[in-house]
Each structure stands twice: as C-alpha cells, then as structure tokens.
Image (cartoon, rainbow, N blue to C red; front, side, top):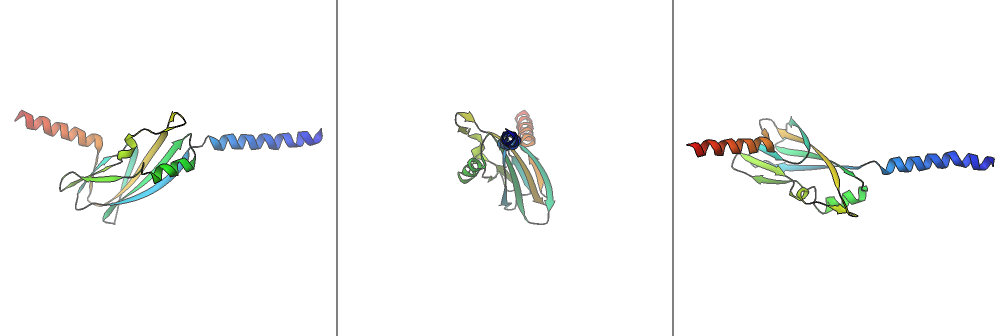
Length: 151
C-alpha cells in the first residue's frame, strides 16, 4: 500500500507536466534578409505586430517570430518548408519597396481546425530608410487619389 502512495505523487506530477507542455504554442524564429535595390521607402504589408530599428548594413533584416497554437513544432517546420512564412518584396516605384507574405492569406486546416498563428516581426533597416505601415500607405493612396480626382 505504501508503494502505491509513493507512485501516486510522481505519476500525478508527470501527467501535469505533460499537459502543461502540450498547451504551449510551438514557437520558431526565422530570419530573412532583403536587398533594398535603391529604395528609400519600405512599405510593411505584413499581418501582425512589428518593431523597427536601424543598423549600419545596407539591406533589410526581418526576424519573424511564429507562435502556432494547438500544433506541434514539426507541423510549423513543415509549413516553413512549404513557404508559408516566406517574405517577398515588390518594387512599387523607384523609391518604394513593399514587404509582404502572400501565403499567409491562405487558411490552413489541421484535423478540421483552422491553424491559429501569432506572428510578430522585428525589422532592421539602414539609416535614412522611411518605413510606412500598410494602413498608412492605404490612407496616403486614398488621399492622393481623392486629391487628384478633385482637380
């Protein structure tokens, strides 16, 4: 009987640890670098929060932190291999370049449940590069089109 009591507490602790660990989101950090190709403005068209800082290099560095809920780390790695989190660039004009992640627009279902992802970015740019959030770019574009249509 005493042996059973001695096994009860460790078994309970192991079960509690497994349940706690299983509920943690799978977190992976990726790093991507992009050449500015002479652009002086960077339009950030990414879903999620981002922070920016400047550095002495002549290219953009993006750290992507992915927290995927209710999936394993192996599933997130598979999605990385399938380019779900690949950042692309688009030259808007000679001065502006857009950063975007087109594959995030496609929903992913695992076992009938939609994948829940929290993605944040840390963007390092050379000094003198002007950063525009996509919401600011849309507002500027609407104001520009509105002002031009009134003339």
